[in-house]
Each structure stands twice: as structure tokens, then as C-alpha cells.
Length: 148
Image (cartoon, rainbow, N blue to C red; front, top):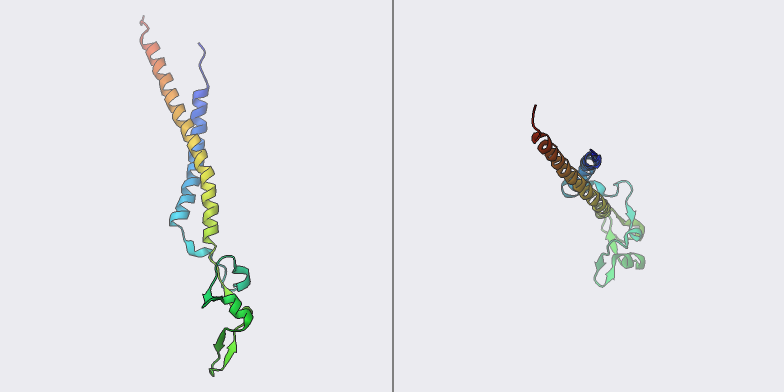
């Protein structure tokens, strides 16, 4: 009698995929929800100039942005003797938290990983069901034979 080899193959492919992709999916989701999100700041020793961060945020004082104040030399600070001097754009630096970009990248990856995990989980379940049904049929066939 012809026996199908596809059932154990589905089971094997499903198990390998569930373990590998499941671990990757679990690790990514744990990083997104429980990981340390404070490690994605730009380094203390290399902050960015304000001009490079103008697409990320804007700080306004009154009706003008901080960058406009700095270029127009209308923003002043005082030194140790309380003598005012204009603050220039090169004096202002910014540290940016890159966590939102990293999070978006991880969640995009988990979309693909989650879909593939679902495919492999389906293969695993189909392989298990077909293997169990095949064994049940074998037992029924061998159990109905007269012994002699």
C-alpha cells in the first residue's frame, strides 16, 4: 500500500519554522515592549547641530522658532559677569533619541516574521493532525485482522 511521506515533512518543516521564527518573533517583541529604550540616544560626545534636527522637532520662543532666533541674533545669554552676548546656532547642540526609528524597523520585521511564523505553525498543526489520523487508521487496520 502507498503511504504518503508529506505528513512527516509538514511536521518537520513546521517544527523547525516554529522554533526558529518563534524565537526571533519573541525576542523582537520583548525588545519592543520591555527592552531598554534609552540606549538609542545620540552619543554625548557627538551631539547634532540644531540645523540637522529641524525635521525632527521645532522649538519656538514667542512667534519665532529657536533656529530663527539664533540666525537673527535675537537670543541672548549671560556670562559669569552677567554681560549679555548673542547665542549663535553653532552654540546649540541636540541629542536625539533614535528609538522611534529603531522601533519602526523592528515592528516592520516582526510583521514578516509573524506571518511566516503563522505559516509554519499551520504546517505544524496540519502535519500533526494528518500524522495522528494516519496512525489511527493504521491501528484500525491492524486491529481488525484476525490473529492466528
